[in-house]
Image (cartoon, rainbow, N blue to C red; front, side, top):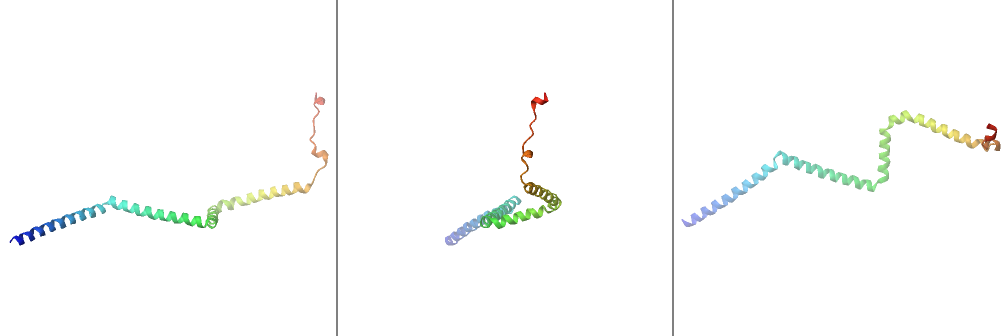
Length: 127
């Protein structure tokens, strides 16, 4: 009988340990399935994915600066296409007028010396 008793006591201890372990695992599962814990886990996963994506974008930009800069400029120009369509003819006309005026100025050549000198007023004659 003592052997049986020792076996029963050992079985009872094992059973209590197993029960405690199951309760501990159940508490962990309950804590993990709380809405706040699920939200925190989701935030963490999203944050890590965004950090990884940002790192990859930064690395690609470092590796390919000019093509990406040109693509960005083209994208901005595409976004601004309507205002450009409206204002481009006016700006082109102004630039053309300025170029024509500048060309006329240089084509005229040097004028006579009488035209270059400013006319001085005689202070004594005015009195």
